[in-house]
Image 1 (cartoon, rainbow over the protein chains, first blue to last red):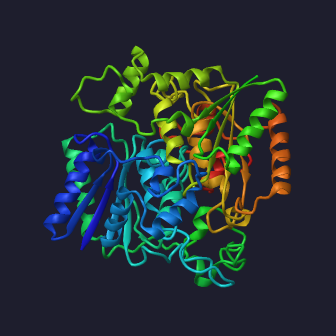
Image 2: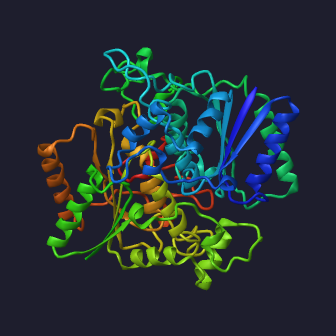
Image 3: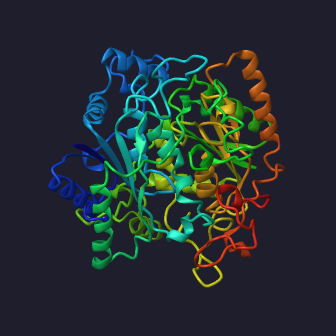
Length: 260
Length: 260
């Protein structure tokens, strides 16, 4: 299988760097093809702007979605964008690896999503009708592929627990897991999160990397998070609200999973 | 009063640009001092890296938190970072204005947070003891200042409602409002969100800007979101979980507000 790791940490000798190296070795040893987009090493351009459409006439107003659509359709995207899209097409599984900075992805990775997820590629796909509101949330260009987050956090696991002060990790990651991975059609696996990274020694790294190795071994057998498909009948269209009879009376992020 | 608007949109003639211009004019007309950090116009460097500490010896491993701490303490931060910190110090209220891209801030604004929120300035502040886990979540350098998000979204309001497919807007914004604004001590006002931006005409813009004008008039009187202070007795320390007797049996993001 082909695995793409999109990796966002500035320091190769960091915990993140070591975990990335471990993952690459482990997957390769199991016979997989591994590709790494090391965003810092690539000098990835984080900021979406007019130059992302190489055919954009100078001085014309920037319209992020329309510019993206035109560039994607006409083949005038900046080459760094189309290269990443090609890696996504070839991948059977994608791992986004990053340290949790301010409860979200580092800017460089957010900018990868914004620029690579072109209109017509990752959004604005499929028809809009009375029964189908675009190919998204369970359908789309990434359907059939798997995705997983590999995240490190300085805080304690309890700080990110169901009643932890930071908010539950699943809720904090919802905009990423549901909003950027399930959205274009990925099956999203439970995240692999390493907490309290300031307390890492050789013994714990051994333990953590063994756990990661297991997760990588099970990349194709782990059940994905049971997010509800948007067009599968659970949501009204076009309001896109969960139908009354499903999780009746409940609100919040977890209702978008089958099990709630 | 001094108001800082941190603004992240590439196009001056966009809806965001028009709302920003309106806000500046409206606040100035009311006698306030307004400063705008127009991140795209400034060519803001989005990516946190070794160069953010100008005294960092070449080839030394990048340690984002330690590097930030040293640069902040020793006055060797990149000048663009210290300039933004000075704007924050002078501000009585801060507005973060941005289009919701992939259910979060644009990368350029995320990078502003990552770089400007230095260790010792916005985190790593205050003592850690049995009763106090750092000056954060209600305490910290920004205490006494107010903050508000001004956000535009292409989707419908119902898509972001309590049972909407995207997730409730309050939950999607939690990592920003709670995790980056309440964290360093801001009083966080309810966000001003404009939905369905593709359907904007002169009449609706008139209506939306009038509503925004009201919010700006009430910037100092609107009750902030009642997030619970971390060190106020609601959380166990050091586990930082909500005490059992508060919102008993409940989990999720809304329990971190008094009213839940």
